[in-house]
Image (cartoon, rainbow, N blue to C red):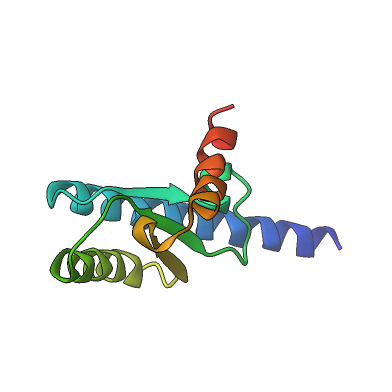
Length: 110
């Protein structure tokens, strides 16, 4: 059983590293285009696991062209990691749902 635990920990660590690197690139690319994207979810909270996906929140209102650009930047940045992701646009959320996402950020900084 110890062997399986070690294997799972290694897999989690590899996925965490790949996810972190991909997200860092996405955030840099988005920032250079004036698009505000935030990491939320398990990676932001610090409880990313071997089966976790990456959750990203695009802040602010966007026209169709900027929205498509944000989607393309994230798809391009996450593709090499092969880790699934969810891309959520703030403009599509209710106030309460947005607060749920933003609470991940508060938890991660405590």
